[in-house]
Image (cartoon, rainbow, N blue to C red):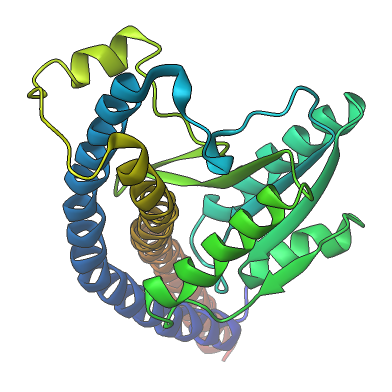
Length: 293
């Protein structure tokens, strides 16, 4: 028969855990609203800037010579930037991305490409350390740092490495925020940039663009706008990661709270049954003793 005291202690422990998970869910929900607003607000700016750049690129045509647009004939070295979190308790948010990243790195290495990893977040560092993956640089505890203070040095590092020939391509891996329950791991190539309407999707997005006269020249504008566009791509990745983390944590804590409630119900039922069995046993012993007298 289960020990009543042990069951009672376990019920109390689970109740305290439920209080913690419930509080964490509320905190994540409160943070999610602001993070979602920031990620959503940045998207129109990025899309419009991309449309302007494509319009400029079509105007300039094949005369563009900006180093950020220069594609290398052979890709031998690649920089992959991974955005993970410092804290856990957010379901498969980090693991889904990191498993995809490991597969991506393995595939590129089989092609003879040398991949350099730059990590943001403790979870990414721990994952790579356990698996013996070489990491060029890691930045921890970055969540409270203003986003542009992260974006500027990272963008400068990407540009410096790409233009110097240290990297033939630069990619960034992060979780795209779909909604609070869905975050999709994706890998986007950020260098070299592309400013031509090469597909129907781009052409449709630019269909409403007005034909402008540019001053200064389109080439000069491209040289000024390309670094800005690169920063918007990186900034959007950080904003999507932040929103996705809070959404994943809110969902994970909600599931944990529900599981704790179910477990408390089962333990309470077990406790009542054990208590009833103990009372029945005591009554039986008393009646048997009385009959013996």
